[in-house]
Image (cartoon, rainbow, N blue to C red; front, side, top):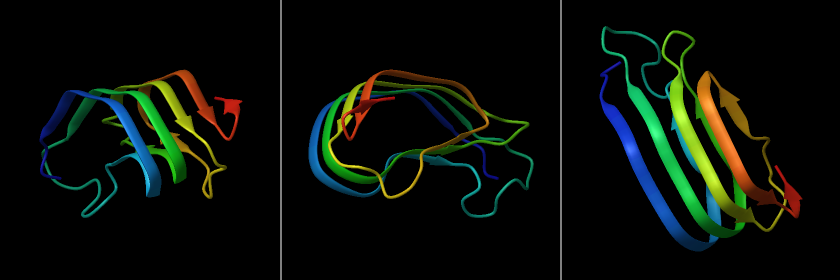
Amino acid sequence: MRGGYIENSHVYRVDVSAIGGPLLLVDYNYGEGNTGAYLPTVTDINLGHWNVTSATQGWNIQGYANDPVGTVRLVDVTIDSALKKANIATNVSDLELTKVVIAGVEQ
């Protein structure tokens, strides 16, 4: 692990036709995995007012048990079509979904 910080990120008012993966991907297990001395910090991630025609997955968020992902907020997010993969949220301190609709179903 190389450590590092992603904090206080805000991405608003996005319209997109197709996403070939998850709308949001935070994967601590990517690359070398849970080895090394420096833990990453990811928190206060905010996505709002997104309109997506299709996405493979809504979110794939995977932290470590000893270093969870912090707060992630999705507000007014719509994915029109059904997902091909189930959403994943493991080792996340706070996942807040407000008016998140996938294939017509509020999450």
